Amino acid sequence: MADKKKIVMNWASACGGCDVSLLDIEEKIFSVLDIADILYWPVAMDFKRQDVLTLGPGSIDIGLFNGAVRTSEQLEDALMLRERCKVLIAYGACACFGGIPGLANVSDRAGIFEVAYHETPSTVNPEGVNPQTVCRVPEGEVTLPEFFDTVYALNQVVRVDYYLPGCPPTEERILDAVNIIAAYAHSGELPPPGTVIASQKALCDECSRVSTRTGARIARINRPHEIIADPGLCFLEQGVLCMGPFTRGGCGGTCISANMPCRGCFGPTEKMLDPGAEALSAFGSIVGPGGEDALTIPEMKAAVNSIKDPVGTFYRFTLPTAIINRTLKDGRNKVKK
Image (cartoon, rainbow, N blue to C red):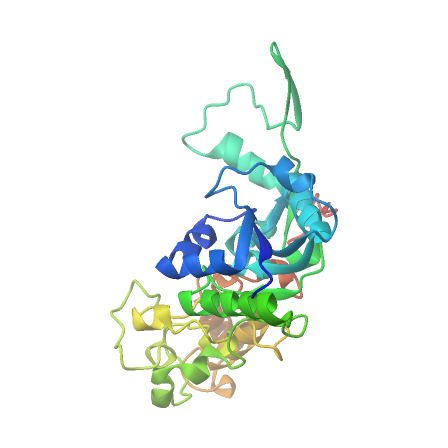
């Protein structure tokens, strides 16, 4: 007889796709109910935060936290779950690495508010008001969470036990997590702390197109919308930048099979410190006609500068966990965390 576990699921700074992904396992989600009671899942069930706050430390077996930490409320949620959960899983690319919300780290709170509340064509804000954490209205006091300067991955604010990457995690990897929970319920056994629930190989090692890769230089960079890529040929051979060599496998090549290059949502392999830096170095050395020795410095700069949106290309999901994860701006170089 399994020891039925207690599970919670929290949604922080994310698009909601991670919550929806749980439904991708279809009727198998009912097998979760055989081994666990769901105590908190705001997006799907009518639980309140107060329900979790009344629980004692270590009273929850497994917590799934999806989304990056962008606000003081999300930080409180992370601390709340860490204190109460025996096992905390970073669920999805945003929780694991900061994800797409982490691209906001190219700016800061002041810069983001300037665009969102003053500069966008659809904004009507003649009084130049920014959101405040406390606002008094005739009915009383209204409070909002503090909006941080920096977006954090979950493990940058609390200890994380396991990582389930992906944007969102795929059905196969979610079922792997379910099996881990089932084993925990039946025997109490868990994988080693820090385990990433995905492949140990790079996606490139699992890609059927890798056999067509010759390592030739990229004469011209093609953005995915500029060409119809040959579905049987390595994207790099066609001048389309692909993060497959620098990204952990295990996603099943969903994007590749749809004839789109890998964008890196499964994060780095175990031995890779900074996938964006690795990719920038690798692509920088093979982009442009001829060898590096045959190019002048302006030609090399032109070749590298032909990479559009380098941050969004190389750090689409991992900027907060990158070696260099912030932008310092002239006149505002004391970026507050």
